[in-house]
Length: 391
Image (cartoon, rainbow, N blue to C red; front, side, top):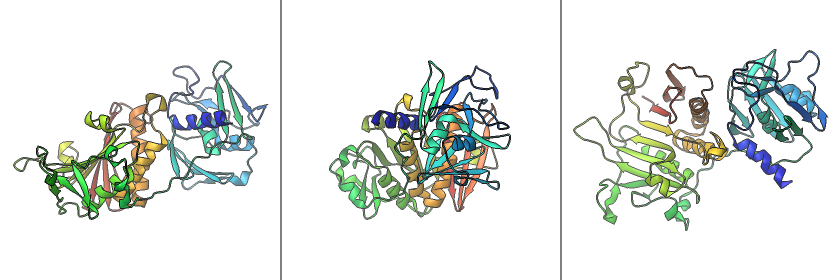
């Protein structure tokens, strides 16, 4: 049992590379595989579209007839024509999948697929292994025999629902806090951080600088809360202040970066990192010579990776949830939810070329009073996202 449960969880964690069929360049071809569902070889019902291999070399199955094949009632598969979204209900779990979107939600947790959901012949198709994840059934791929086995009777560990929780200040009292964050650069005092403004000073009492709030009135709260949600005993958070050039164009910034451990922090290898402008906004429009971008950016997010080891794939739910929690801490739960979905989607495109051609992407989104600017290219492995708040 445990072996099978872990097998499915490994499938869930992997973003790319587990299961590719069809030759290079195959487009909408029939996969050279056999589907065995609950002990029976699966055959597509007459008049219904067959599974196929899409342009991203992923085996796609109709989610409705996959659901029917494992005994789900028609009422448990709902379709919204307005939003082009399917909602699946099974054993108390809920999954939502939207046409053209590589992100599906399972119990509120975002699961990033390695290709977009597609509409074909009036049916919604997604990669077969993600269909198994969405419906909470056991999946097994036998590469030697080219057989995909689905067992809906096998009990599997459900994907846990994501719930945003802002820890209290007691998080800083953790006995292992010295391995989670360095108070040499910043220390929590009265609901905000005081910073070491002079990075060359070694004095303990030099951690006494309070950030200016003229550009971003919420900067102290945002940094404090983002740091708290990122802290855990198995990772390292670097929160610090870097003074800019008063005579030049470089302003002072505070950073919050999430690392695997302190050694990775010393080498500058973060999962993702935020830069908060303290005294000068960033003119992105002039920097990229594009008038549609903001001239008053105050927060920048750089996403380097959402995985720990290469075998995990491009997006692992744990790191996606850490990113989501930090964005909610900074921008609020509602805006943070939408921002995370957009950021993860664009990050995935950068790493897999899903939906991209060779041209540069310039995009702007609005989330409440937050403007998000993004410039993407197919070879950009560490995309930056630029935020302007209420300006």
